[in-house]
Image 1 (spheres, rainbow, N blue to C red):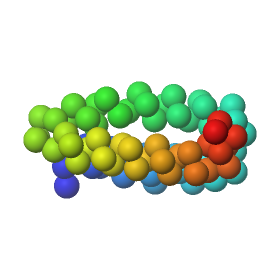
Image 2: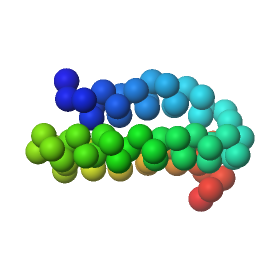
Image 3: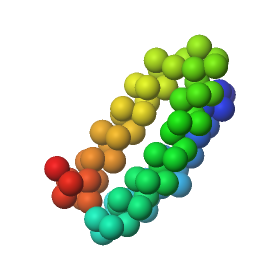
Length: 75
């Protein structure tokens, strides 16, 4: 598995369970942590020629984040 995919999967496994029922403040703090990981994932994907696929995964990731209760408060 590509390293960038491992990073995206780790975000799903580590951060998503915490975001199911969280405060808006905790949600924003977690979003900040996630956004510090994503540039590394994208750089790795770009180097391996999978930048487009990674961008799609990042878009899906943010869509899922906004579907959480705290994410809906932002909308």
